[in-house]
Length: 503
Image 1: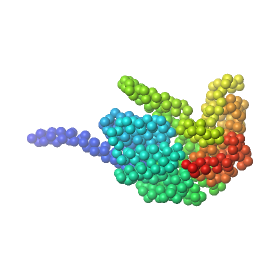
Image 2: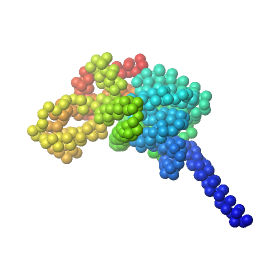
Image 3: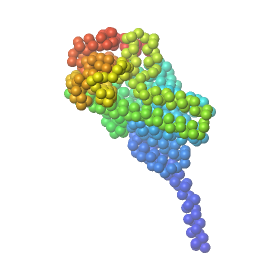
Image 4: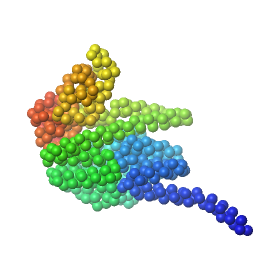
């Protein structure tokens, strides 16, 4: 009889083991989600562990999505993209409509950050085509996505209206995190349009309701921008430094770079050259790391989509093959030309005069790629050497080292481990100009991009702009600026300010 009861006990333990394991996994997922925006590395480790346990498809999808979000909070877009697309793939293979929505909406958010708007729109169309009904929470996130697109296109009034609609949905469903994100987004729009009082109101709301380090980083960063616009430079420095400290704690490379760049310009405004150059070097380093990660992320999206396309082809999904081929072609095009082309703004340049072409995003990085095509083989430089130097020039253009006032062809040749004659030949042939013209145009396009994307630069004197872009004097900067754009820097700034006020 005792043997019989022992057998029954062991049998019940075996039956109960899977239920206990499921409860443990669910508990781990809940813990990881609660710590996601303050301890993203820990949340990522938990998600990684759950994935390694090879649980059911839904649990594995949740864990993979959580892992993607943990990388996103850390500013690692490449790993975030890999896991976000994997989570979407897993969700698409399930019958869980809520999980499909969650993975697609996060993928769209990430793709927007990477500038892959066509891919994001395709995912949005998938949602509209397949979702039977969308909850108020997800509707709010879709309003938020539309607001992001409109804000990037400088349609600020429409973006504000969409964010207010999103807030209504978030409040109804008590989505405190998303509600706070919407308040932060509104503060950023009001900062861009110089409505500082309104920006302050929404930042106060966001600060009061911020319960995690990720949102605190954003709020402090925007407070720094607000104080800077008010010329309260000491308060701006404090806010940027606090945001930087938190971004390092998370860690988040994106906001580390943003804060270092803002500290750089704040010290420039205070004419503290020692701190300015110190943070300028840090900003160059972090900017390179961020741009490299984004480029890798775009490549990862392309590779993943291409492989997924092959899998679908093997399954003979004829009706899906057509749009995937188009998607793969678009991604290939984006991968080849890189993140330097903003196709949305480029379509508008047909309506503008020659001056307005300098409003297209990232012109400072893109112009060198479209100057002149080489016509014949160089008689001085071998083809292999020329290609190597051209690659180094591309990296040089992305590094912003051209803002160093001491940059010369001799210095650059030394950095490239070549001689000035070879380097001059490659620049003349590939860029269609001599070295001085090449460097000057890089610098002018760099400062134009700063003026376009950061309204605080309108507070600076022309001499400050000259110094930051690498010119030795106000007069030389003004002369070169006019020769490149056709108008003086002061007129160019006046035009941009009037344009922003009318948006």
